[in-house]
Amino acid sequence: MSNPETTGHLVSPASGDVTPGTVRSDLALASWELLVVDAVGNVIEFWGFKRKQGRMWALLYLRDAAMTATEIQGSLGLSKGAVSMLSRELERWQVLRRVRRPGDSAWRFAAATDLLRMIHRVLAEREIVFLGRVAADLAAAERAARAAADVAPEVVDRVTRMRRLAEVVEKAVRVLSETSRLDISGLVGVLHATGRRMVTR
Image (cartoon, rainbow, N blue to C red; front, top):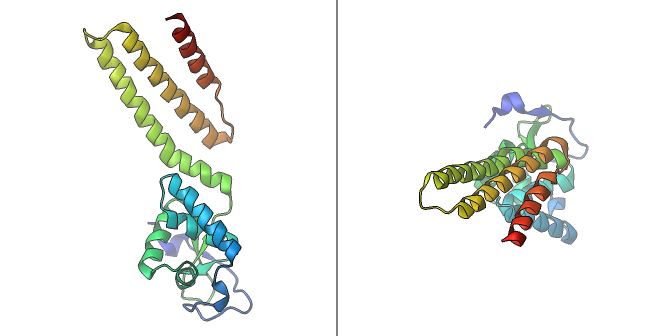
């Protein structure tokens, strides 16, 4: 994890602030806030991340304010250790940052608010790597199938189509992560080619 002394930010103190390390009574989630926090947590879990990561980010995003670990604990009902672990994980994904107010010894956490940039970063750091491994595995399988004497040409052709499809999807996701544009022209070409072969067989 990055050193907070070099990556932290200073923010101006807000009026009416309380002593660092205490939980304000107004930090309890309203019913509609709980719906949002849980919905985001569910989506994040569906994407293969931790539900608590999504809930923590959603809380900070909704409150639009830097919160201490103790305040986050009180709002989400998390333990001190859980908040510490989740904050480190979210910092690594750069979806939250640490801030410190002048004269305040406590670090606070603020949510990154550029949603599109966050999605791009996750695509670039996780999905593209995964898709690249899939394409590489299929390419290795294709080479092995071609070299084997007992594999029929039509079977090799199916492996080739799967490899091409994986490469096209990887390219489309890479373009999306870099430009916010989803290019599916190659995917359409692969699917059309596959359809033509199915019709002629």
